[in-house]
Amino acid sequence: MGKNKVKDFTREYAKKCSSKEKIDLELYDKFGVKKGLRDKNGKGVLSGLTTVSLIKSSEEIDGKTVPCDGELYYRGYNIHDLVDGFRSKGRFGFEEIAYLLLFDELPNESELDNFRDILAASRTLPTNFTRDVIMKAPSQDIMNSLTKSVLTLASYDDNVSDTSIDNVLRQCLMLISVFPMFAVYAYQAYNHYEKDDSLYIHRPDAKLSFAENILRMLRPDKKYTEIEAKVLDAALVLHMEHGGGNNSTFTTRVVTSSGSDTYSVIAAALSSLKGPKHGGANIKVVRMIDDLKKNVSDIRDEKQIREYLTKLLKKEAFDKSGLIYGMGHAVYSISDPRATIFKSFVEQLAAESNHKEEFELYSMIERLAPEVIAENCHIYKGVSANVDFYSGFVYSMLGIPTELYTPIFAMARIVGWSAHRIEELINVDKIIRPAYKSIMKMKEYKDIDER
Image (cartoon, rainbow, N blue to C red; front, side, top):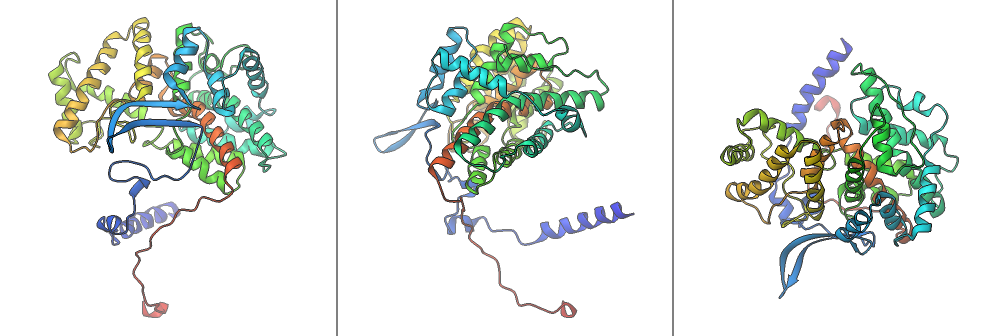
């Protein structure tokens, strides 16, 4: 009775909330308020300075802003050069690029070996933490489980609130190291208790790379191929950082500015990342492709694919959102450099895992979608495939369950969050406090018996 009463109340009063006068959209222009902290052309409001990364999507030519191929820089280095650098030598890149983002320089061999040892030494959990925290109350929402583990781990830290840089760095390195354990173990618990499958809890191996350990802990037999580990490693590097303006990194900055502890900051960033408009987009791509396959008789027929994409835009297919997931980006217009790099090794993995036909489907959609969008929508800038378009396909080929897609994003992005948290602590001593223009109507108070 109690639960039903609450449900009836919330249903009725939700309508009351919705029926209240909504804010007139014209008022945003009148008062110069930029919705989503972006102007009509999608350019973000300048709210800080950073040396961590740079996104370039346009150039100033003769006083005009001209779109260009997207570029991404980590600490001044072009992402293409960084990825080519470690891949051409057969190295795993996660640890090397994490070092770069945290310390603003590329490590030499000795420094890199020492950093790997530090991460391995930090990859431990308190006694019985896996059993008592991670495996208790398993959930399909691994991001919530990840957040729970981060906040609980704070209880084991005697210096939880110390915001000195050496202590924050210690905390960040530890969280970077244990994120894969948090996420994979949470999935294994869910897979066992909720899906009635076998339970596997594999310990990480200090001799293996970050990417190798993820696959080792996830797979029942602990086995993986070199190409699988190298592709996952590259994916982690590409997701590691993306400018200070993305939602979760801005959240990191905002909560850091209040003086809060590292665990609370990372938990807040996780809560931001899990939103489908941010870290959950690649899952939408995979589900959209699945729906396409069910509704198109021949996935090699360009005409049928074009018709399906048109239905997506007209809200007649998939989730009726009017979106072609994986297409377009808040900043990039001509190309997303991460998607370009992704595609270079997606094709190789697809060939080795017998997914060549599916790769050709993705390639066709990537080519056709911008044309279909241009024909059916009014857009202010170009549209191209973003990193989410191919990342979900990569994860599916690696046999990674969809429940872990966003957590893997988090395993990478925590490096960027850590770099921005440290930068905020070192350089800024003011709390971030944006302003909101109030347009409420003034009302005269009435006593309760007169209402």
